[in-house]
Image (cartoon, rainbow, N blue to C red; front, top):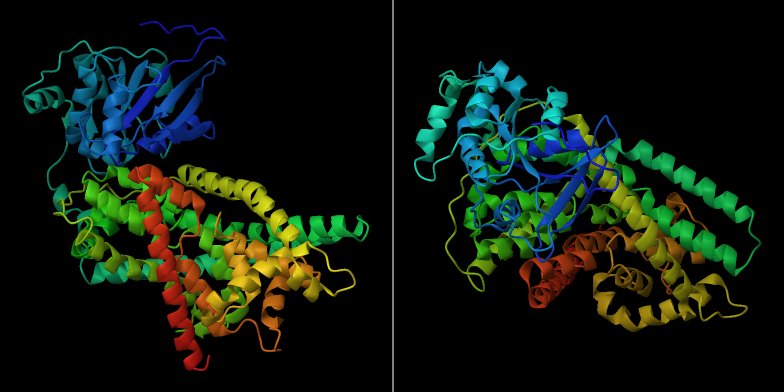
Amino acid sequence: MNSTHIEADEEPPLIGVVGNPNTGKTTLFNALTGLHQRVGNYAGVTVERKQGRLRLSDRSHLDLLDLPGSYTLDGRSPDEKVVGEVLKNQLDGERPLSAVLVVADVVHLKRNFNLVSEVLQTGLPCVVAVNMVDLGRSKGIAVDCARLSDRLGIDVVPVSATRREGLEDLIDCLRRPRSASTEVPVEDVSEWIDSTLEGAFTNPPGLTDSRSDRVDRALTHPVFGSLAFFAVMVIVFQAIFSWSAPFMDAIDGTVSLFGNRVGSKIPEGLFRSLVVDGAIAGVGSVVIFLPQIAFLFFAISVLEDCGYMPRAALMMDRLMRWCGLSGRSFIPMLCSFACAVPGIMATRTIEDRRDRLATILVAPLMSCSARLPVYTLFIAAFIPKVAILGWVGLQGLTMMGLYLLGVVIAVPVARLLKRTALEGTTVPFLMELPSYKVPNFRTIWLRVYHACYAFLRRAGTVIFVASLVIWALATFPRTEGADDATSLRNSALGTAGRLIEPVVKPLGWDWRLAVASLSAFPAREIVVASLATIYSVEEGEEDVESLKLALVNAKREDGSPAFTIPVALSVMVFFALCAQCSSTLAVIRRESGSWGWAGFSFIYMTGLAYVGALAVYRVAAGAGL
């Protein structure tokens, strides 16, 4: 078939990219499209829609649609339903596919051909990419792609997405995809797969006792696997807190210098206060945590891309099953450590609605990246910088303890939900463990880039606006002739804080901390911007180091310290458990189909946060910390 010429004003062909989970489908999609991607949702459903553009050498292009990983076109989970509906042109508002790119894992080629057979039955032009051929060579696996092409009547291309092998050949085939010349039987598909692969696919025996399997026996062992997982988490959180410090210092210095230079060019007055104390102090106090966000997403991406995450899910299945869930819930919960929104959306792979809903309700308890600025600020200001066991810092352990807190609380909450409102039997957990491989750093870079970009965009929009609003509330109505502390107390923000102070006083909080936490409802990290704005108004400083000193030196009206170690622990525990994130509540409503479940999440998490903060404050204060 000849390549079709596309006029400049014509809509480019849309090619769906499908494959079993863990075949490297998304890695190949990223390798083909690079940064030319956009993410949204399919019309009328909650499943994420990821589309990218493949630019060709003749300046034309193809649109690639990265469909969710699926084992079949007739699946029951939301993700698998969408795959079937898109390929069968049954999804309203969606462009019909011009062709399909099926990604198959060379190590599990026979199993992957079940999906290949279903795609061929749709009649759509198709190209098969046999991925991970470099791994196949190391295992002695041989695939004759030319022979498979002849038998199927379509192009079958050997590729390695991680090493970018075979991509040019694959792109040439995507220019002119063909429909299969062979007829796939509706019945007896396994006999058809065997005959198609016979003589074209050699998988040597004896791989079951490979080095990979011996590693798996250790990493999924009830004791050694748990210890390994704990060690990995210690390293990750130590890295997040310690290794990012030089980069954070550099950003902090840049923000401080920028604020001083801007302030020196603006005359003294309200406008200068708005720019320096409102905008720069508010946004700058959050932007400084960008390196930690990058380290967190880097760590999660590496663990996922090397093949460790499915092993962790298999190991955690024992704990999940005790809660009434299964190992399927582990990956969405782990994703929620980066952000609860994609974590909740990842529950679409769970077939059972009760299990899916229970996972949605506990996923926000995982400490997301938005909580990192809160943890880091208070840990750096109030937790001593001392070493434990020689190399593990107390600050890093505190950070890890806050992350583990969400997990510890999620276990009984999930167990209670599955024995009351969401009672039902747990679906058995089956998962295909992918082969270990060297992480694809191009894929990791793309994930970190998109995460950092989203964080900065949030800082430049939501947090920027919130900082200006908080500055205005902390400045007006003005008290002429009064000092900064009195003006702040008499402002709209101060009046609101003093009204709710009795509610938070048992937690050791004063009214300033109360209003800062209230203002953080749109996004948790805004509490740092709020504190920066409040204390900049009071202290006249705009850099984060000055904010730490302001918190340490802050006094209550009776002269006692406003912040102590018990108060700092109370604040961190509250934000570890609270539901102050409007985006998370909105996605809970969307995924569950009810504002009732979103409201339930807000109420139960706020209650847990208050009780937890109260308990830790009383215990820490009683211990004399």
